[in-house]
Image 1 (tube, rainbow, N blue to C red):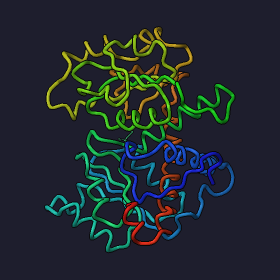
Image 2: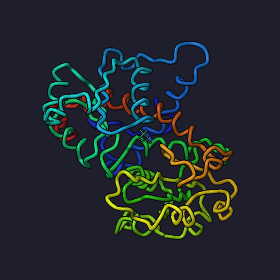
Image 3: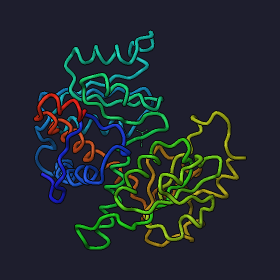
Length: 335
Ligand code: CP
């Protein structure tokens, strides 16, 4: 299955990249290309029957375009049955607890439950109590592990192509993450994932959007955009999450644009070949200009394409977790 990784998947759930070893991350990245090939089939069916008869439930408490559709498509391409539950139309609005709702979903024999929730820890708490295999699709400002994986995959793919080395890894690759670090689960998953893979990460934004002690995650920190990007092979622009800010954390939009927007002018400080990435959704012309987001260096839509393959890989590995082959006592330790 995997061409280069020798790791074996033993986990019940995928909650956070902080939990994973480099080997486990590489196992997922190395499993993805076969699924990318399935999605890119020009003739024939874009499906493989690896999850046939399984039930994948998408349970989203926050808006999502990319992640929800990507998980749904990934499950369908693996031939699973899918159910989508949105918070506004489920009985949680009548006061039902997350545990009660999941117990009812499990009574219908769910296998994988993909959850996005505004509270950090929601996926972890459900994974501990329930037998379904839980995939965290974003929990508050904590983590968004499949985004971190698809970002690492996209960067590694480009490094391999530009270096003409099919085995190149991320050791020493410089990645600058720009913007609203404080509210960003994407930043946290990217930092955990990329640093475990050997990349060197610098985070940059207004001081009010840089969490205290972020340097303890093993990253460099600066409030100077040009300093952050001058040696970056990847410039990863984050969305300004105005909806998560209790109060405006920078003086004005105009001030943010002047100091932190990634545009043609600020990019003059960066290497010509630097990749431009963004998790979406984009606030066009706020954190990044439209010409840069749509320009030749941008791999933003490649991130989306790779996301389906990564999510197929994750669900395939979860369902085939080796924990299912272990005796009961050992299995409970691995969950
Ligand atoms: N990147 C991302 O999580 O996008 P959505 O909010 O549209 O899922």
